[in-house]
Image 1 (cartoon, helix red, strand yellow):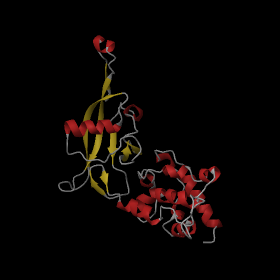
Image 2 (tube, one colour):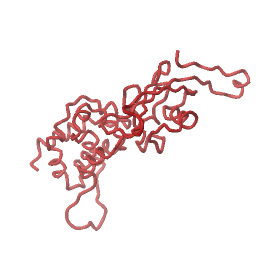
Image 3 (tube, helix red, strand yellow):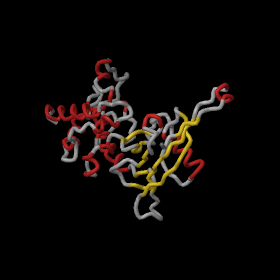
Image 4 (cartoon, one colour):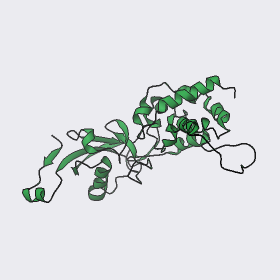
Length: 254
């Protein structure tokens, strides 16, 4: 058994000590300066029941191998920096508890798929952000600057509320098999962020975005596998948003 629980002594129990266990992590490693191809290395760490995969990676980097490379920032599921494949699924390492990914077996940690690998768990995010920038993720308005704030009803705000939650972690896009096989596809995250403005009652650029997404590598490349919805750490109904954009294209005369 990989995970071995360590019971606290009677003195530790009195002091309120938390039991620990040993867990094995298989981490993909790749240094372009010395490696011809990625490979896995195995590490054992001591964890508490409340520890996250990010805590285990920190323990490896800080105590066992300082060369291990991965992205992280806020460590609270807000920045989206530490998206990676954990036991074959895209997750945020800072939101994934070790106890929830079967610590009785080795936990496999890999970089997200479909983007160029740079080192270890770090990928080149520029293709992802290129698609994001292309859909014009900002408010577009016509006419003169308003003399007062742009008023919006609660119902109008609710129309696109779900897609405002995106943190650009790329978990949805890099879980998409179409994206893996077609580097030109905009991907779910770009479409989600286009949705956020297309259905904003204050925005005048919806037709421009729909025209962009009507491209052969745009929204029609989606095959509705729901991988993106399952992968989203913010619970966004990604597939639903993509379908709403498709419907808007069918009814629009941009």
